[in-house]
Image (tube, rainbow, N blue to C red; front, side, top):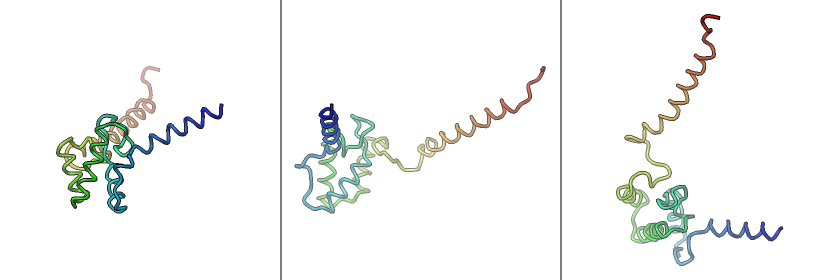
Amino acid sequence: MRIHYICLIFVLASKAFAVEPSEILNDTKLEDRARNLSSNIRCLVCQNENIDSSESEFAKDLRLYIRDQLVEGRTDEEIEKFLVSKYGSYILFKPEFTGYNIFLYLLGPFIFIFSFIMILLVFLNPKKGE
């Protein structure tokens, strides 16, 4: 039974390191920047996984693109802007707090507060006719 747990740990651990050794940059500063960028970029194939831990071909292509752009001297902001212009703000796990995103950010708390007030009104309102 223990062997099953050990195998499960190795399978899960291998998925956590989707970046292949051939992708890793020799410059540790650039590699750290690449890892930081790719941890905030959503894999559009997996959707709930960042490209740093995704094994899809799309994620691999984006990781290579990011590393190529960093080697060419692009800033993190320039790379993110290009990816957003090509794939939309959905590709970012933490999109900017601007435009229609403000509506999406504020909609959840608004619904929660409105629901709480409605529940209070229903339960605190004395029932008529009793």
